[in-house]
Length: 199
Image (tube, rainbow, N blue to C red):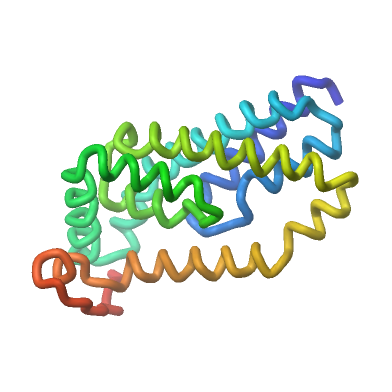
């Protein structure tokens, strides 16, 4: 395979993983695997992989409102948009929160599903996410390159208690986004659960 095609594969794989609105294994796992499998330049893999992730998340924020409009009732969509407006009002504090969240080993899918459903402008979330993602993926890929000497170890590490707990946490966060009444939380300081969100 031509060298540039290998880097294109890194870009495409990272993008596809981050387009999906479900908490899949993080893009850096694929980046580590491909870097080791094809003996690629680690710094190019980081740059290309993070660029693919950013494009994937951007596309997710563009199409998720259309899906949300078809799946969820108008009240739930208005509720999440209300949450998005509250986050937008926070200014630099919301950017700092997004940046900090992106540094943590937590799934970022719920963050972008929420932003997309809330119809937040991508420029309000992408820059802070990019900064956090660049740092966290750089650390992860460098550690992965150092620790994993062959592809089977990376694949074995892809399914671990950490990845399973990350998936469960991601599902829990998405459930919280969907089933908590955010207006009641912000306006009345009460936690209300509503399971009647579907059309």
